[in-house]
Length: 236
Length: 236
Image (cartoon, each protein chain N blue to C red):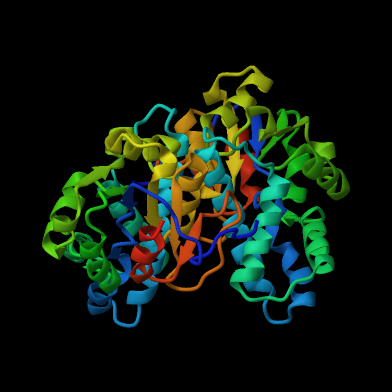
């Protein structure tokens, strides 16, 4: 699969939809808290925790028609932390677990997010995230991101996780626009690919210079930082 | 989630269903081929390749109601290899790619699989795998595994990948047994959990002593080697 578009193209959209975790908020900002409890292991813990968190959303979504229901993102985040501590043989306690889960509610926003969001008005901007409202709303408010968003939409209303097309449909229903007129912005390649497969105009924020995934259609554009976003969507 | 059963329990089943990749066949036996092309990187390549292969099956299954169809396991295995080479910055060629994909058709069986399968008769034994028939049948024949199996079932008939309940239903349809009377054997924890969520009697082969995943119900039993399987299912 070849990336067919680049930031040299201009994309014509009437609204922007942002992924939250990894895109606006740095999930690895929990490293500092993890490092304080497990010196020298904070990076590993953060990495395994995040990988399992995503894996559990995909697996539970696939298992979902089985007898038991889906758990919310807060529950899966806690399960993933428990797995990560066990896999890395870190002797966690109830108190440490509580503090680490709290750190996930207090993530740092990416500097390029805070620098870019104000200038995107008057384009409607919303968040579409795997997180629960209880996780997302306080985080967006505390970081100042909320004041630049017109709405925060949780996958809860779809009853499944990304990249199910039912999740991306939530943005269409909310914005009442054709999928192609909606710009979807995510730093998670699998999420940008899922949005493109659904039919949104998809923009992948590749901050770390990793290769694109190969299991679906390439996003419409790749940028290295959200700083590039206004020029990409403005001059359509 | 607590593992509620152990190998001390005996499980009463009327047939056994085996996962193939990672359970009967060692997916990391491609390391030798990988190492010959990329000295010092064979282990990394094998690890990233396998992780992406699984990730792509989950993601494509979830994206599936979108416009484009599902690709088969051979195609996803090739995509995952391409990603792994790009991510690890390995300069692959068409010929190396071809040889590595061929190696996946020539996996080594686990010694405990070959040692155990013959003694499980007369219990009906089948394979239920993400692989295509074109991948599975020659591999099972060449390794001698096929002669100990009554059938080889590919997920192709379900049109999706594990752990979708539609896949585990294929075993029920084939064996015409109640799910609880079917023993499902996998070394992939997520697969054993998916089978348990569906309702099969699930046995997790934990060869490497990793912790159990937390996103679904615990398998009915955990064993460290297939060698333990006959005693587990025999004396019910």
